[in-house]
Length: 337
Image 1 (cartoon, helix red, strand yellow):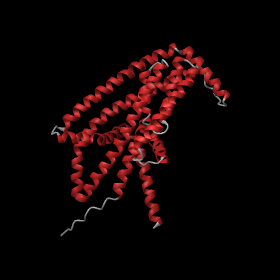
Image 2 (spheres, rainbow, N blue to C red):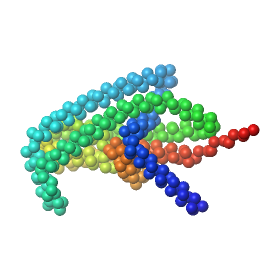
Image 3 (cartoon, one colour):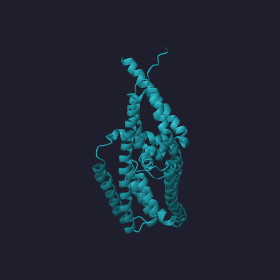
Image 4 (cartoon, one colour):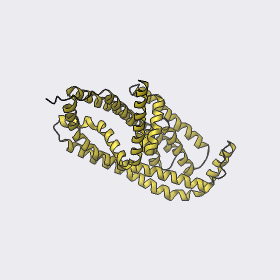
């Protein structure tokens, strides 16, 4: 009995490793498909609303697609403008960057960190490279969301066909269980994404006010970074604060204001992420911190920053589907007579 269980666990582990390799190798195809699967559960209520009002589903989603495209294009225009301004402005701040970087390097040396190989020029280039890569990742995410929405419309149309196939092969009871599974996935993902979106939006608005009071530059990019990285559990809010703080130091200068800004930014993150979010979300998702950290690491290794953004919803999806598959009944054996 123990040997059979060990063989089963080994097969499952090997299958998961192979799946991770496939997802990583073909990420340009699999990532939009995964986003489309998540969007399917998010927008199923919209499809049901369209059917109840006897409105063609393709017409509803076509209009929604146009609205999302316009919103993403509008936001993308700000990213492009700020990106260009950032590239043009950083050379003008080169002297200030060098002064601030030298101060930070000296501070690191006093704290016991060996930063002798990091010159002020390298620090400036690293900052520009990191910010450019971050903006590029945001543009990639936007383009993949548009592709995922197209794939989602095909998935919605094929959903009824899936139920019909399951009914023919496994029976009516299995269709009922599958529908309950879909509703469970839809409810949990809607709860998580809705709560995260509300908290991320509130965090971005309050931090935007703080940045205005501190007369920060490139506020549009900073707010977008705050909004998106807050979807990454546990570490996303801290990374967002550090990036915004670095951008402030490189463009405004290193002074005691940086300490005040850091304290305010962290206070806002703690307020929304550690106080308000748990009260609103409650214990509905029932995911342990260890599982969240593990999913964050695995999906980050597979798909990078975008994988981290999607880590919790994808883990929810896999967990619920695994439970359903584990309780599936074998298809009835047809009598040859």
